Length: 179
Image 1 (cartoon, one colour):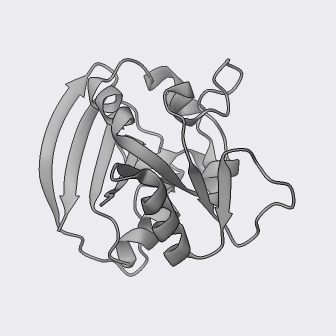
Image 2 (tube, rainbow, N blue to C red):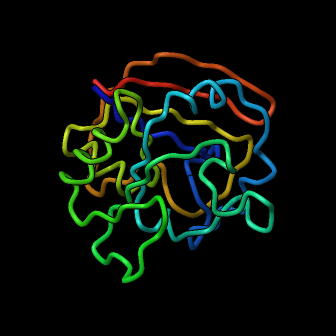
């Protein structure tokens, strides 16, 4: 059965996007990362939050703009949104409720990972007890403001078990299992 993995790049001070969803900060921190390279063939589908889907692209103004993982991955994508667009988007299914999104993305993953993209959809998956693992690629930069990796007003205590720690010049990769 497919596992749900929240994978994300994050600044050292805990932000996955800058103010207003700005992803331009990430461009200079992208580069060879064997952990990510090894993960991509294991991803069967994406479950993406609407803000992430329609947001800024770290590959903006390059030949890979608009492509998942900068063109390193292709397959079925599911976008969780309250307002699906009127016109279809090739390769993308818009889903209006979390349970349907989880069920459909797991079925499409074919026993591989469902890669969850977006802080809010990851938080929702965690609250639903559906999130299995978290991979954070910590970039050597501090943004000071923006979208947090995990935001839960009032606090919560999510227990994690470290699976691995690897590093490359552009990132330190921290992989956890959700307990």
